[in-house]
Image (cartoon, rainbow, N blue to C red; front, side):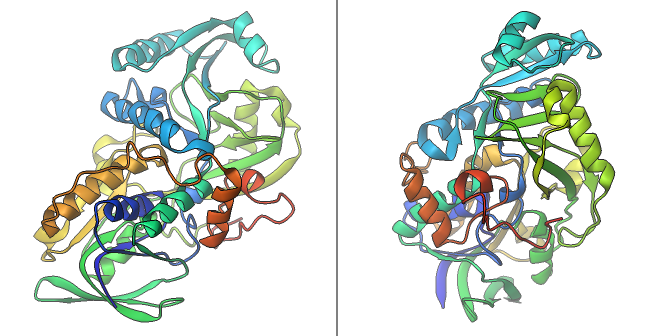
Length: 416
């Protein structure tokens, strides 16, 4: 099998790259070892960032978030739920931090409005009694199963070939180029690409290693707890330095509580701890007390695809996770690039930057179209969910919204 561009990884970034390249007329094949969204994309808390979380620590990353937030709100339709968000200052929180974040948002261009305690409690009736004030920001909720499947469908409609359940089993390098990629599962064949994109997220180091290249990943696990609660309108963020249990994301009849940050050696095989659950619930309940006793619907862990050198340089939790495009020409392979790091909110920007690079290497003169072109099915939830089923793309994050609650297809090796 021959292809111009082979994309390895079927999460948001991989399918975004496949869509971008296909819209530019490039012959693309995408392979994913499981169903689409089987990795990090389908195991997040589902927050579409406004950038406010990173405004004071990384204004460049925050600006990227607000720009991509606006683009996705325009193009993604029913993949997005426009809830708005609140950064909540409680009695024990530093008021100077609130002021710093608000000033940083204003400088970046992230819209804010400050609510006093009475107005904040009116917006969220069950908000903690010790709320001092809150700041409105344009956060939203993203349903990653729909988003990824819609990207894959648009790529397919423009000539791409999408292969779920097609794990990469080996990579052949000769004369400074990847000449063949052995793919198992539903493909069970050798693919001969002109160019290879490694978009495997937390598993990017493993894929790169098959080609004899080192990509140092520093994955961390985080827990999400979904509980029964149907009275929350906006996303809640604790207005303090990022820490465990500081985000509450509303769905229809549930809220998702998150999260923790614990380093892991292997994104497929890691332990989990009871304290992660109890601390996440307790800390989120400090903002929204009813969730402390709300029945738990499901619990899952996701693994962040953090890039090791960046983590070493920046240090500290809560710093905006920028993305990195690693051209492996200097490693001795001229037709291979890895894209690592980043956030779900900025997947389209990551895809555009990577597609720009691939087109440059392939001498393809075509502009990115993904910022202005609506995703297929954007206005039709049933059609979006049909795409999810087509690509076996149901993730656990939005299982209550996309799949029937009684039978979500959410089992993966990292489910706990």
